[in-house]
Length: 365
Image (cartoon, rainbow, N blue to C red; front, side, top):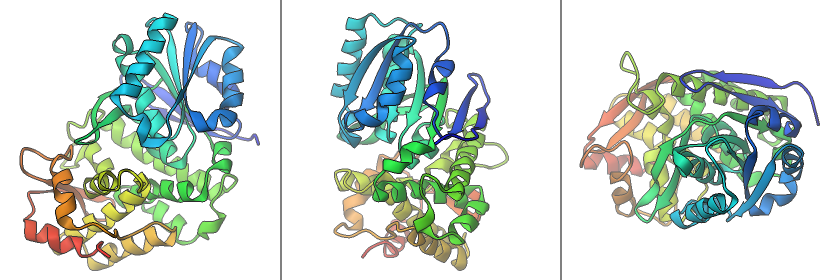
């Protein structure tokens, strides 16, 4: 399917465009540019067929090294990154060559990290294949791998040269993965753009598919939310006027990452974020910051699209250790991104353990 393409410009020191549309494979060489000679296509190995049109577009112009990666979070290890570095070295990649990632958020994170660290940084273009990656991992320049201590604890900021969000790629996405991606979309509605919530609450979730104009608008809106945040605070140093800056994008992630880690990453990221947002809303409500109806709306809106709003088989004591190594923590003090109202974020620093435990009751099955 082809049609109109929406460009969303990302300003800053290293400007680039996010292109959202259908049938974007032919746009890839133009984003990479003329100076590139070699391109490493880092793709999720189970997506070889879907990657075909993009690989074809590359081999017509460049010397291509195709590297299949393990599925999901298992790709985000130092061992896999090292394998990629060794392959780039054997192929003679120089600083003027480039990396293209093709896959979901894990592929984007790993591939972006490889590009950020090879020769201290080479050009990278992301082709996200999941809704989650389109609205989250592919935009903003964060890259990373996991360690035994937690998720994304090793990484670098490395902005892409461009992002191609080809909505046709969502047609083969398992329904559960599409739904999981809506976790980050709905999150954007609560932290910055309530129109996202209205669209979700007034649309039959079953109609949200690759051809849905509503889904296309949701992708565009969620990308714009992230772009506005990262342009103002690329390296998470803080916003202006009391705004938490880039930390706002971590809404729901403190508990969410802990849930993911405890499950061995069998709980999808978007699912964990939904649970984490419901928890953060309850925490803000108990702290006297958030109205009851907004906290209830969290549970109802995430559940409406089919996302979990509670966690089973795990207790608060199982998760608190992982939360204490969250990137927002400062020393021994936990810090949570919470809301005072729709699109009104703030930081709740050092909440009492009793409050944390009480809030957990809202998501404990």
